Length: 384
Image 1 (cartoon, rainbow, N blue to C red):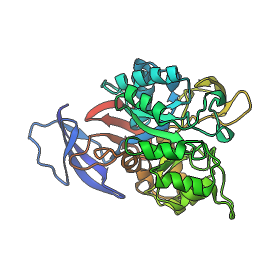
Image 2 (tube, rainbow, N blue to C red):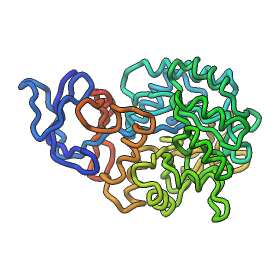
Image 3 (tube, one colour):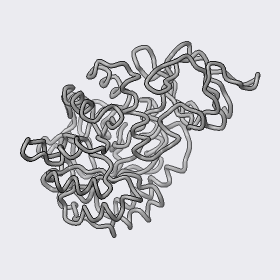
C-alpha cells in the first residue's frame, strides 16, 4: 500500500504508549495524531488495541536460519536471514562479517551491497559490521587467530571502497599496534566500536578520545574491571560511548544487565543478538565463519575448546528478556532495540514513530510476541 492508516493502536511515542492513529504515505510516517487527516478512501489497518512499536534494529549478528553471514549470498542475506529476522520483529540490521581472509571479506561486501539495494519480504539490510581483523589475540573469542592483523587505515580504506558505503560499523581492539591512530583516521567515516580487548584504561580512553563511539558485547571478550586497573571495562562504563549487550541470559547474568543500565542509562545501551546461523534452528553442529560450532540447549560454543561463540538469540526474545531482567515495562526498555541503535549509527529516520520517519513498525501481542512486522510501509511478516 502506498497510503494507509493504522487505527485502534497503542502507539509507542517515546517512553510511553498512547492511543494514536498513524498515517503512512510512500513508506514514511506522514501523520501521528489522535485522529489523522487522511483521504476518506484510504485503507485502514485496525490493530484491535495492540501495541505498535518502532521496528527493532540489530547492529551485531552473524546469521540465522541456517545461513552464516561470511558465506551468505545476496539472496541468502535477504531471502533467508532477513526473512527470518522479520518474523522476530527486526526491520533493519547490519550483517557482521567475522574476521576472515581479505578475499572472503571483499566477497562478503559485494554480496551485502547488492542485498542493500533490494526490497522484499524481509528485514532491511542497512549495512556491514566488520568485526575485525584488527583484534587482540588474547581476547579473540571465535576469531581465527592467524587472520588477525595490526591496525591499518589502508586495509580499512580498501574495504570501505569495495563496500561503496556499505561499511557502517567496525570493531577494533585498542591495544593492537596502530589501532589508536587508525581510529583517528577513520572515525569520521565509520562508527568504531572497541572490544575483544584486554586494553589498559588509558589506552581505551585514548581510542574513545580519538573517535570510538561504542563497545562491542560489553563484559564479553573483554578485560574485566579491577579497582586498581579499571581497564577497557572501566573506560566504556565511565565514558559516554554506547555499550552493546547480549541479553540472552547466558552472556550476561540479569544482574549484569541491570548494572550496565544503571551505569550507562537506558539511552546508552544497545541490545544486540550476536546470533549465528543456528538462530531459529534446533541444537546441532553449525559454522561461525571458519569455525565449527556446537549448539547444546541453545548455547553456541566452539567445537575446538568450548569458547562461547555467538548466540541463538533473536530481537523478539531480547525484548522479553529485558522486561524480565529489569522488571520494567516494554516502554522503558524499547529504546535498547530501536532508537539507541539508530542514534548510534546516525540513522535519523529509524528507531522512532514520528512524522518523517520510515514506516518501520512491529505489532506486539499482549505477551510481547511479534504479530506483524512492517518495513517501509510494507507488511513483510504477519503471524498466522
